[in-house]
Length: 237
Ligand SMILES: Nc1ncnc2c1ncn2[C@@H]1O[C@H](COP(=O)(O)OP(=O)(O)O)[C@@H](O)[C@H]1O
Ligand SMILES: [Mg+2]
Image 1 (cartoon, rainbow, N blue to C red):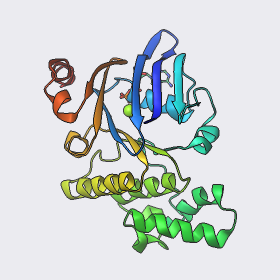
Image 2: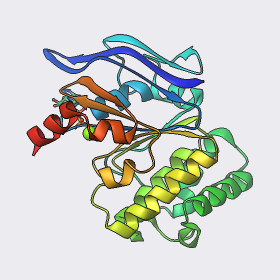
Image 3: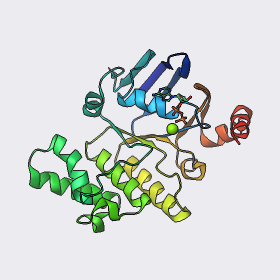
Image 4: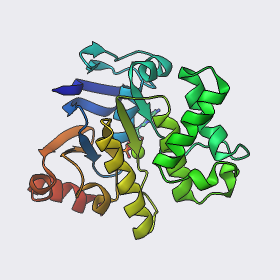
């Protein structure tokens, strides 16, 4: 059954069309990769799904309920969690406090919010940083911290924007492990990723955008052999 349904979504900024008639779905507990060259419209589409932009046209539903045009807080309450391309963590706050800011949205009791935050920190393998300031963590650790914070709002689907960019191979493996654990937990993942070695082996489905439009959709194997996709990536390089 499909959880997220993006249907004929377009987003225009003045004369520029960042997304044009994009349709795809994400099933419950599925990992879907959203890939494409720079400027293809991946982040814009994320922003439409997460409520940061209202689509210019089209519909977006989560569990059958329309979320297009809702503000970010309402999309989050409906079950859309997200991380940002530039990891936003509060540097002077501890890792635990960072996750607590999100856990407190659904759990007003500070002690229980702290417990829940600790659980999510352990989930992303960062419990040892609980009492350390976020600023003391590496980029890779801060990205996982941002994932823990997004998970603490208890989303049905988690949108991750380039959480593997710039990581070394062992850090990519760690990020991949976290994504697999999220799927096991029953949360769907929509992942924008330039690091194809990270996303291709684990995705149930890949959606390819180029210049705002969807140019391919299928299994990682299908998409990697698609001449349109190869041409789009060669054109990028
Ligand atoms: N807030 C905005 N205002 C105007 N143009 C934007 C805005 N956000 C993105 N764009 C434009 O939309 C296009 C797609 O950008 P983006 O979604 O960031 O692509 P990607 O994430 O695939 O690299 C680009 O041409 C970009 O300049
Ligand atoms: Mg982007």
